[in-house]
Image 1 (tube, protein in one colour):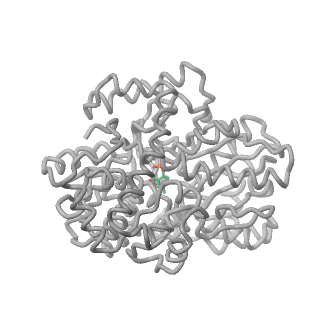
Image 2: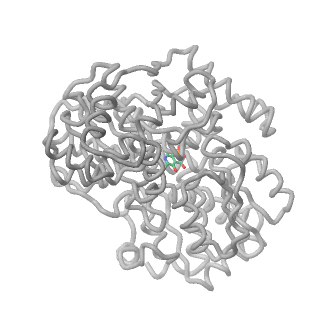
Image 3: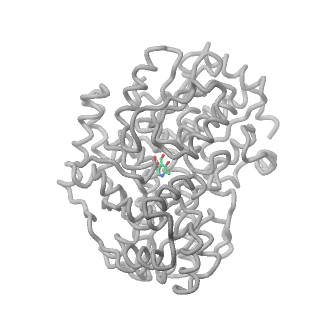
Length: 498
Ligand SMILES: Cc1ncc(COP(=O)(O)O)c(C=O)c1O
């Protein structure tokens, strides 16, 4: 299926009827995109049901928990997404840096379950995916495919995870418990940046018409979900803090580039608050920065290509972060000696230290990118930067152990002080590129080789994405998805339960 064909109506009535019967037999209702953006707009019964579900089980009620408000916080009387504000004592810069926490999403403890829901549901409600006959194939570097398997289990369809064999052991442990058949975990060669190998495996899998590939790097609903849901959650967070600090500006939104779905939130924040959009990538694999390539350990990003759903020409800054820094800080935040150092020598409070220990590797990378951008742009206390920690530290104990082993197996406060001094206090603003028109075109053009030459996207479609009118035009599709979801719920017979 051409990813540019976003249907506005049912395209196969037979498949649609089969899907309706399947959901009816399971009593499954689907949340609308607007409800996941603003759970306050959900029918009370469904919101309560989501609250009562086992968050670690493939319980259909968890669909209504696929949003940013599972552990809400109050700021100035407003309910906002769970987040941590990082003080200058930690970051070394005066700008206000806020990190939204993806680990409160159900089932996979990462916000990628949102992308998975967003990619499958438009096909389900248009009769393009048959939950009985089709297999949903989820190519990923680990979190999106876990989200996909979780959504597949809930919908009672077969899901297949395709990911590099070198990803963290914790991702595989989770998958082994959740797949219905061990053959549904397909390990491709390499690690994080070997996405081409994932595409090759998917091309092979797609030869069977029963397999539907849900390629997050090319599925515009992934972009749209983050535009609508992550974008509105970040806007609400900023507005609540701005209410307490008059004059606060949203200087930037920072997100690592995996599929570039999360970066879609930046489009919304630029429209509403003038935020700069910052794409973070590993300096060990500097594809956007320098057309570069390489291996790295910031798991979930840096995939050696420019995703089809990346709105490149709206991106303002690229910030390169080293995986040495993210690995070192993961150890600083996650070790006893590191925590003692942060408390005793740096005077950071216990709740903050606890929160830092919960950031996954790409979340730490995003924080480092936010600090670099604050340095490069001389941001001050009236400037806010919002970023995300897509997942939490619980997905990386094996990576922490491996990094500790590389350091000789011991870690004390001197090691902690070295990491703090090198990566935080003494951090630089190197590998930060403020994009001008030519830079944007250069990065955009790089995508040609993957999408047109390799993956067969028509060059006219590829090129349409150069212009902002294309992306603005996409936004209207959100209301269309909602109408289709409403119709399917009605046909399933669950609308009345609301
Ligand atoms: C841990 C982690 N961080 C960051 C990302 C990047 O997010 P996105 O794919 O929305 O660009 C991913 C994507 O899988 C991820 O798993």
